[in-house]
Amino acid sequence: MKLYLVQHGEAMEKGSHPERPLTETGTADIESVARFMARIGVHVSEVWHSGKTRAIQTANILVGQIAKGAKIVVDEELNPKGAVGGLARWLAKRDEDLLITGHMPHLARLAGLLLADEEDAEPLSFCKGAAVCLERGESGHWRVSWMVTPSILRKLT
Image (cartoon, rainbow, N blue to C red; front, side, top):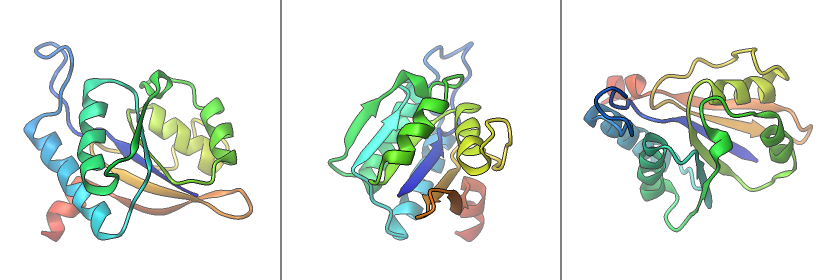
């Protein structure tokens, strides 16, 4: 199974935009990451997000490139401070690839639990718009297959 974790793109400040939609840069970064993922053959049939505007926008951009017709799942547990233990146990039983668009520190804690069996391990350094592919092997252990950030993609173009 492959699990794609994508941190939402850069969002507007809460003080001036309470819903925190993506900025122009945030949108462009996610579009770049989505094109990259499409080029390397990523495809999923389900995309999950927290229901927060910036995560919804990020998910919609990704769906347009790599998951046309995908089932969209809103799960409030994917919020920045949501619990990760139940999700990790559920993922251990899942076989179908999945993409989650989310927030910090939730994504980092989930990656820590999957990769190092410790939520606070911080095995990955996420940034806005970053995408990582985790792969669960036959042993049940997770490993990083690849990771890309918008700044890396800007250097390649």
